[in-house]
Amino acid sequence: MSLWRLEWLRMMRTKRWVAIFGVFTFFGIIGPLSARYIGEIVERFGGGVQVTFPEPTPADGIMQYSANVQQLGLLVLVMIAAGALTIESRYEMAVFLRTRVMSTTRLLIPRYVVVAATGILAYVAGSLLAWYETAVLIGTPGTGAMAAGMLYGSVYLLFAVSVVAFFGSTLKNVLPTVILSLVVLVILPIVGLIPSLTDWLPSHLTGALDGLVGGAAIGDFLKAMFVTLAGTFALLYGTIGVLARREL
Image (cartoon, rainbow, N blue to C red; front, side, top):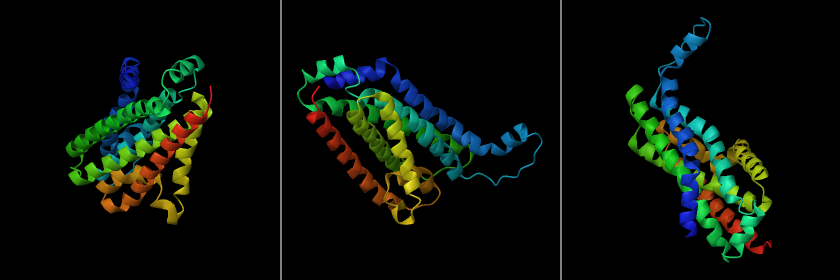
C-alpha cells in the first residue's frame, strides 16, 4: 500500500473529514442566515430591547461565514492536522516508518497534501453554501470576488497546515503542536495591526473573501499571497530538514 493511499484511507476511515467538512458547511449555512435575520434574533431573545440594524448586504452574509470558519473552522483543521503531521508522536510507528521509508519528504508530503486538500475542499464547500444562501436571502455576491476570495483563503489554509507540520516535526507531541500553531496563527493578526505590515502578512488573506465581496480590489491581497506561499514552502523545507537530521 502506498503512503498516499494510506493517508487517504486514514482521513476517510477515521471520519476526520466529517469533522472538517461539518464545521465549514455548518457555518456556510448559518452565516448568511444570521446576517439576514440578526434583527429578529435580537428582538426574540433580547428581552424586548428594540435595536435597529441596517439592511444586510451580500458582504455581511459572507463576512458571518468567513469570521466563523477562520476561528472554529481553523481550530478543527489545526487539531486534525496535528494528529496527522506529528509523525513521531508514536515511537513504535515512527520506527516502523523511518526504517522502511528512507526519504522524509515521502513521509511528510502525503500527510500534508491530504490534510490540506481536505481543509481546502471543506472551505470551498462552505463558501459555495454561503454564496448560495447569501444570494437567496440578501443579494448575489460577485462571481469574481467570490472566486478570488476562495483562492486567497485556500492559500492561507496551505500556510496554516505548514505551520502545524513544522511544529509537529519539532515538538513530536500533538498537544504542544496544536497550542504553538494556534499561538502563531493568532499572533499574526495582532502583528498585522502595524500599518506597514498589514498587507504583507498571511493573516491578511483571512479577510479576503468578505473584503472582496465588499468592494476591495483583488490586487489588495497579492502581496500577502506571495509572502504566504513563500512562507509555506519555507516551513515545509524546514520541516523536511528537521525530520532528516533527527535520529530516532
